Picture 1 (spheres, one colour):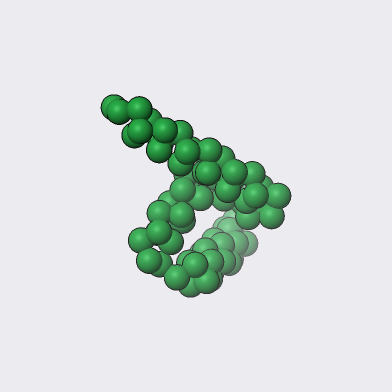
Picture 2: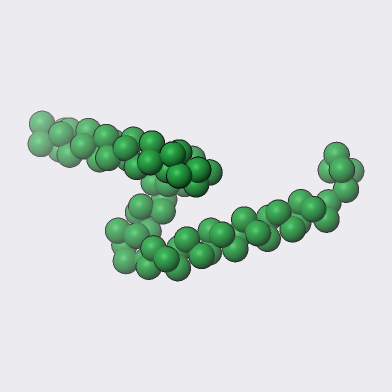
Length: 74
């Protein structure tokens, strides 16, 4: 790996760390892996507002499913 490539990777990791810190402050409830996936999708051209709407809808559906499940998962 060249020094230039290593610098680029280090910079990307620092950027992700900063984005994660901001994400935590905004209480997005995204882990680093999920955040990195979202960033990758946005860099690939996915509309950020549409992505946010999908994440919110998935969370609503997950909450509804959990609300219907019996206590203790039995």
